[in-house]
Image (cartoon, rainbow, N blue to C red; front, top):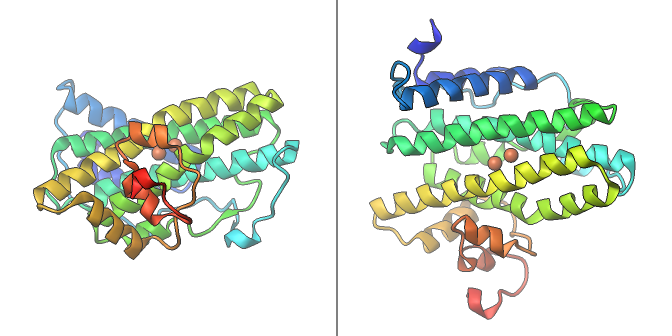
Amino acid sequence: MTQSSLTLAQMATDVLNCADGRAKTALSHKHAAAWRASRAGDAPEIAIGSATPPLHPARPAEPELLHPRDVPKRKPGSPQGRIALLHAVAHIELNAVDLHWDIIARFTHVPMPLGFYDDWVKSADEESKHFNLMCDCLESLGSHYGALPAHAGMWRAAEDTVDDLMGRLAVVPMVLEARGLDVTPGMIALFRKAGVQQALDALEVIYAEEVGHVAYGAKWFNFLCGRDNLDPKAEFHALVQKYFHGALKPPFNEEKRADAGLPPDFYWPLADGEAPAYAR
Ligand SMILES: [Fe+2]
Ligand SMILES: [Fe+2]
């Protein structure tokens, strides 16, 4: 089958079934470019179609995947600690590539405007770039993705929400990716202090682009609530309590969360500790 005869759902499944990180992200970029060209009218139109995405995406033989409690902790201020941090981010980015293609392939039975697909294709393409940036940083520091163990269980949120698009939007972009906005400034500060310019530049790109992914989550979550006449805040609270295991952890990046369309009364009531008066 030539590329132009693939549907978007088949392209997404192709990426999910590719195990090697660099190969997966190259395929992701190629399919994203084909989708963009089709949408701009510069190439044959690509249908959304339908496919059978795997329950778990293909993964490389390395890194070894361990329970989070068994992943060795390293001092963040040491060179080895910085490598471990970049390795952990690379692992998150590779999962994010698959999460964005999975939402495209998994829910084709729910009628959505084409803009929904545009947003997740763009996000998947950006995650592919993020993974490669992290791999480049690791390689400059004498390491590589796969050299250290990584967290198992990153796919749990996808499995839990395999038949619930609103649950998927609530937990993946609006909880997990929003958490990335909370923790990335600390990582940026750490690499700035250490004077590791390549990692600093890469993390700045990731930080800027992740706001968009959270915003797409909030946008399509609100869209579905509006279509079904549901109260978005109450629905978000119910779905996060159903699918997310544990409380949200402050401090929150309220400024970037606001940029992404996440108001404080969405996340504070789900957090550890007392919500400030303005967020109740
Ligand atoms: Fe990312
Ligand atoms: Fe993301």
